[in-house]
Length: 267
Image (tube, rainbow, N blue to C red; front, side, top):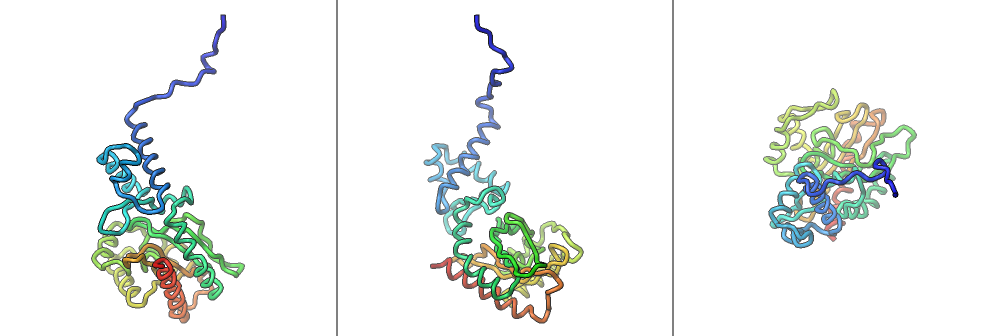
């Protein structure tokens, strides 16, 4: 008679548990969004996944709430992956195309300034996610890892993005609880709104050690075809090379780069 060691047998896998089923369906939604080269509607996703529209809609809202999916800008609601997924994988086709379009402009700006250039995408209306970087030529330079996130109120890119939004929307975002990341970080909505309006007028925003110690930056926002901000370019440098007298010059350069990327995305 043959005997079997119970310890060698695989443990029975739970089937049909509500939590497991929801997780599997949520992952299938993410896979379907990843496979698309464009934002997709609930009805089409429902057909692809062979799930009821109400179920797909509920899963999408949960993914949106947790920061893994987002709606695109447009009259009709369509869904796409959130840039937050770049912290786990680099398969977001929208961000890939953004990087490809932006890269030559980022390289040119880095050559012009000699400083580190950061390119970040807007994740919902909460934060920026760094998706590309061109390093400075200097031995002492700033560094931020790809996938790093930055709150909008603490960065020049975030303030530039806020400046491109309708003032009421920017005020709504700044009315939320804001974290004081550094001693220089402002969490006063009125003061921040003044900076946002100043950035709107100038076309660029400035960050002086508001997100990280001894790091300064000048940034501008990139828009989509509808004029909605989707990304930001920043010239980042250690404070030992930050010269307030050069801010208008850097601002003009980074604004020019952001406009060039915006124009390139439209073609």
